[in-house]
Length: 260
Image 1 (cartoon, helix red, strand yellow):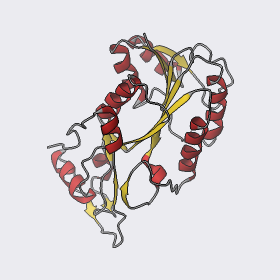
Image 2: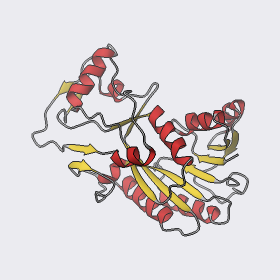
Image 3: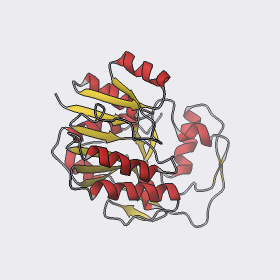
Image 4: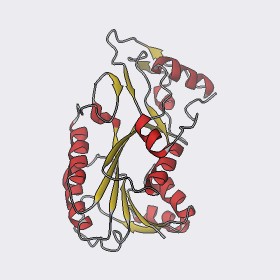
């Protein structure tokens, strides 16, 4: 039985942990509160409460696995330092491969067809930390790493239409670059089953309508007030390609971005 640890059982990490557990994996999962830990224990996940600001505590049991999946967002000011501390623990563990959930935000405002070969161009400090973390993991010879750069996450009770309803969309002619939770989970499990290492993958659904058209249709379907469009005369037309992951895993994305 392959043993997996998931650092950060939040919106993505928790359903991923549940899915992997149902698929027959042993799963260690981390959370930041005892209340969340109790809910995780009820699902059968081997749960740990970890303080991400202080990873000096004993992580030996949590990291006594074959693979580690890191799903914590870079919201901490010391995100890079946190990963550095974590790496020192990984080096002395049984972990052979790390999967780090990054973000397509590393490409910044670059326009055109975006592939994994496109240069990173961060525009926020949090994104700089993501890139630094990618490099820290990739450059460590003690274990293998895969980076998956996620598009905007959508899924149950999470869709930009709820936030954009009735608000001004300043970039209606730009393209959506979204990824559904179900695709994320399926692809990560497929990746676990392979021997692929030291690769970067974009995870974005190949459905790329204009934001104005897409969110208008979504709000209509959800019976929400429609957005207000205020066109930017210089839109950044960016289409993030997932062709590489599709070819590597022989994967076909689901039609789960179309609500109607």
